[in-house]
Image (cartoon, rainbow, N blue to C red; front, side, top):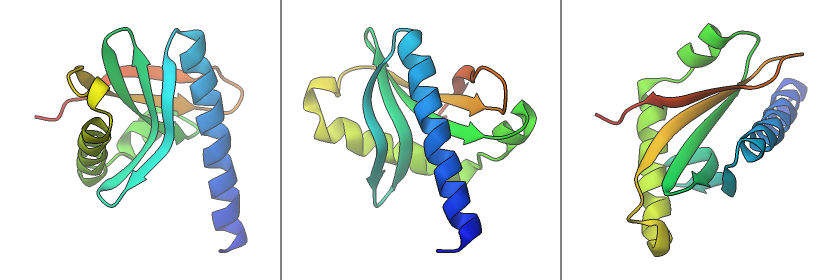
Length: 120
């Protein structure tokens, strides 16, 4: 792994910790971090009340760049991974779920975009 890749990995892990803290403050319970399956990866899976949330975390300097960096293919992979998560956790399988994004920017409080996209 190159030094640039290691730095990006460390930045991503830091952003995920900050995002998880921000979500916990808002009343979310973090159920999984970096949930990985062959179909894809979900940075955070959270629950608030009767709603499951697949959270994509982006460490970027601005909101637009962060949102533009989530491709259609990546959204599909997150959706596929969420379906597998629900299959593996039968007690949660009946709950509705959505896709959120948390953007972590330097020197700013994380920005939480609720229901960032729909799987339509």
